[in-house]
Figure (cartoon, rainbow, N blue to C red):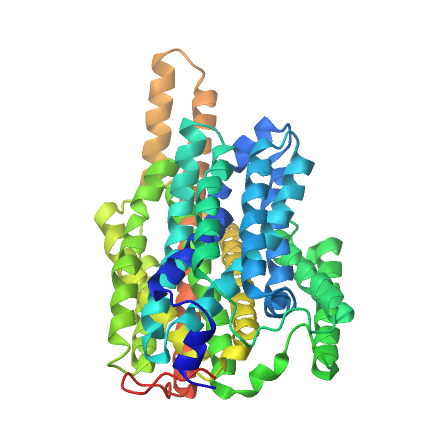
Length: 524
């Protein structure tokens, strides 16, 4: 039987929104944990007698494990059962979170972060697949609007929450807060989630070569992207070796998976044009938007003197924009061609990135509020229609595999975007410092006044005039470097803005979803 009635007869009737809340709780916890650790790294390093560079492996290990597990999630769900895999993932993530909070040394913390990354990577694509199947096609926009709230809002509030917990309590609480959320998610999943009929547990052959090549290829790529700027990219033998390993392993994996009878990743889904362009678009969207998300907090804290909590509050309008837009977009999609909403989202995203490129050090709260609010709305216009359009032609039986690849490309795109943004800032800082420094001379108004003011102040206390001159030069160098840093951030925003403009034509290569509100729901 292929009708909804037949499907309903196979499992208990459950309110769709209870299913949505069940999977969203786990997904929100995972995405939040990706960013909440960032602001706590100095405290973690000090507490565990490690350097800040060593502590960054707590981030790298998580992201690498996440990248390795994502593409094979669909295969794992078919092999072990989706509900069973989801509950093991949530339980494992919750236990690993408590152990991270108790970790006495950095190596032990890194080991438990790897477990967090492996279990957390499973939850994102599976929760998306469960939602897409639980809701009929004409209501998937609403489901994706709800799911997108966690994916977009969690990275925004993560640094705020992490800064508050670390400052007022301890860095260990950034892990302990996952325990009640994880327990609640486990209870709800047990009650409300059931495997569909086409999930045949334990029937697939194990593709050992595919799993191994996935782990090596995407693991090496993620480490290279995360450590590239720190190691000076191709000037580092480590980064070159990692990139070569990633290229060889991923190429070999693609060839192997296309020939394998029971591939761990089914690449044949890319034969559908709409899905292929959707995956390309989510890669580019992740590239430009997540690259920009990392810039503004750094700009506020390093150049404008915002403490972590104040910076988090100043960044809240972006989350507010997404919170308002995503549910509305989900409702509007049933009446408007989703491609029009996607087009509007890309244009608005580019507009806000160019808007950020005109900021200066005197920018106040409202100068930051409006572009962020609009960018948050643009995120809603992007993620909800894009996910819905991309997954529309995918049959339910292939949904787990399709969402795994979709989330993998988004994560890889975001890692590349962050790496590009950090590299542009670092490289252009050197360029602008040289340019601005070359234009400073004894006849410039600001250096002359600065020198005289410091000289007079020190001479009034009897200090040597030479010392005052050194102080003046140091202050001048600081001013030059501050302005150069600002220009480098603005350059990065401008680069990302132009890359967003390039995305616009790709929207028109996607087909309009064939499902409409008045059509009967059919389970394929």
